[in-house]
Image (cartoon, rainbow, N blue to C red; front, top):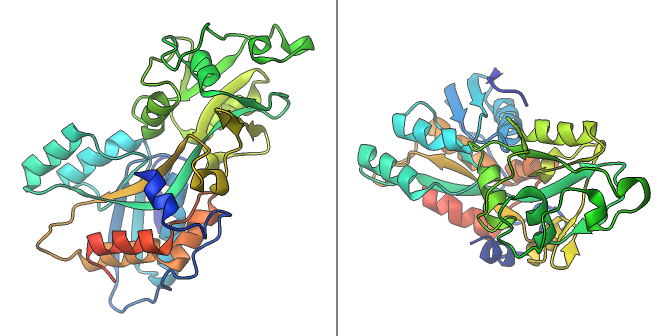
Length: 320
């Protein structure tokens, strides 16, 4: 049984490690997952909302091999993962960013070694507009001037209307409505760092508790704009080109570095360097980093890991 308590991305070096996934194909060199005997019990996951769907799909795949495993998934936000790892209240801590120094320090103070964090897929953060909005793309400076009050990326003026980014006619005087994740989200922190040059969000932002609710807000507001993982795209929104010059978010533009908002998706674990993972955690991570596990990544709209990168993370976990 999967119990979901909340409703349901050094990136350049990894992307350069293999181009086979540039079109969201799974690397054929990834190992096939083969089940082992004697796996049953309970697993829990606390962390990123961005990875909520992925963790659920991986749990379903895992249970197809091991029907006697129960999985409980909470997806309130990345910042809930490190405390769960530190306090031992979860087996896995999905994160859409690396742990902060303070989070690692708290874990290490408790356990005597750092928490282990492995990449499990690659995400592109998309900037979404309503499907009826004709805008084709925005520069980073424009994105910053739309979302931030500080314009640290170099914009000359605050942008509050669609006419200021080139839209004409009925769109020219329409006010822009902003949708954002909340501060507990790793996506919030990533967007703030990379799309706003560490600036401050405007007070008028509509903070949302989850990635899907950001997209839903934009879909329901013709003037809306927001950001979320590419895996949350729906028919009610469009993911627009972003960058200098603007480029469309895709596996190819993430792999060649031209799309500026690409990141690893992570899972944190409590891995004692002197001990092996327990069998449940070991087999779950073997599945995640296998061909079948990375096919799930593609199915959920993200970019799979190259085999060489997955092999490095399997090595860090001490699994084959």
